[in-house]
Length: 430
Ligand SMILES: CSC[C@H]1O[C@@H](n2cnc3c(O)ncnc32)[C@H](O)[C@@H]1O
Ligand SMILES: [Zn+2]
Image (cartoon, rainbow, N blue to C red; front, top):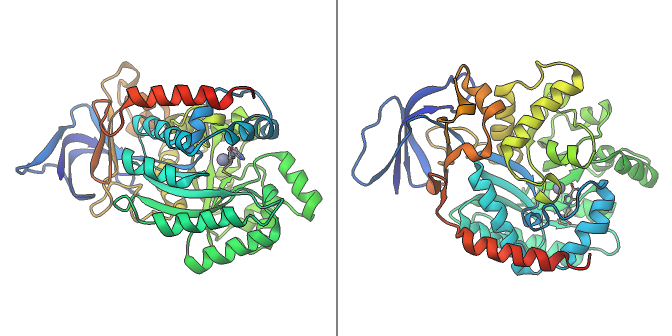
């Protein structure tokens, strides 16, 4: 299949490229040409870019996709109350089929709001992978593992099975990671084993880190260290590629500890705001050369998985926190949400930039809206004014998943019926 996008404003997200008017040609799963004018060929699906902006799809670096079923179920609680009293009991009621439908609901929301790739950490990952096969999104899948009361043998085996069965599947859209849940739910010995396995197989690790001040106190009581120091003491940052979700409570030495690591930090500002966790010092990390990407966390905490909300929250929080409006300017926050996240998922050579040879993961934003007029600066417009619902077309791996705001791989009537019924049953009695 070939696609020709004609006469759109193109924002490549490459360093030094200013937005320009032009055409993009896609063949198979890749971008094959970007130029001022490209002649259409027989069989091309031509998309007219009038009043459209083409940019790389956004990359959500931290999600728990089936938590879409728990959106709005429990709000206004502290993280550990929310997790222990509400989320874990509800999750205990979820069947593998619930997880399949919950993941599909998240995929629909992400495709509609311009996310083309995401990183997921959850359970029943075979069902999530089946949803990825169907919906067409690109995903890095992680079986979340808790290792406290037992040795986690079954969970570890499921994680190994996921990596072996699904890496490279769905036309190459699926990649995998190992997912020890967090420093406070994983004891040192099993963590060491996971690190050794990840290094040996060169599979990245995806883990929550330093999300709350309570976590910092708990880890200090247990091990006499900060959470970051704890992971460092196990050798996590020496060779493994690591995706650290949150990293809100880092002191100066912790930031030093992450310098030079492979991977980096997923900043999830809306979830951090809503759970009252704090503001991650991402501009300090970036100044030290630590790679930062952007994620939503699950809809159970963030309430939406719209990356445009995260983009705004991320830049505004840095400006507010340091009393400095020059922090994380528009171009930089867009780089964080595209190239930054791609690097965290070990996909920096595949996605995150519009460039010949890269995977064709492209979104078209409809600029013919009152809140997007006039256009003084496209990067400012995208970072500060665009909403997820302004995304008109979403292409992943050279396949059109949404056109003119119509989803082409997902039947929303069936999806909403399934998810409403299942969500109601899951929370009954909690
Ligand atoms: C074992 S699968 C993943 C596990 O993580 C839980 N979770 C969701 N959001 C958060 C968060 O912000 N911090 C820590 N853990 C979180 C989710 O409910 C699953 O049980
Ligand atoms: Zn999370």
